[in-house]
Image (tube, rainbow, N blue to C red; front, top):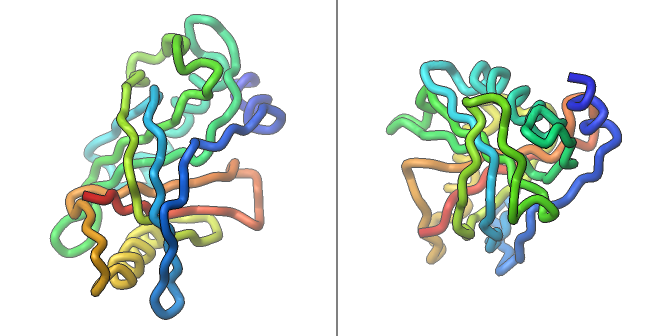
Length: 190
């Protein structure tokens, strides 16, 4: 636990590599089309719980792994954003499952430490292209749903196509940062 707190407060922060391909907007919603690099990710999947509750279960597991609860006992530093996949229902509400994705820092990509917690998995993920919109505050499930709806509306009438069965919600900031927070919703380009 101490390693997790130390890493969160004083550890290095690396940004998940991406390239902005284009920008756009409609009314008060601006967005970017980004090509995000693939790589190795630490993941935790939670089912049968609402998104906010599932995050409270999954995030500490990821943070402990990053903070040193692994076979090498080392803190790796943070990579932002931390993203989590959500699965919308027909009415826009979210199913009771999510999958948190933490991109392993570049220094550990070739040989990531093995998680001590069996619910934390290491997975290879190919690069993805996304449509992204940004917003502030302490984001909750309702905020992500609202911003995903706004992004979809902003993309109407453009050539943009994206997956309808999953989208990503992201956060860049530790929970103790009270203002200037950055969150995003990513629709995955098809």
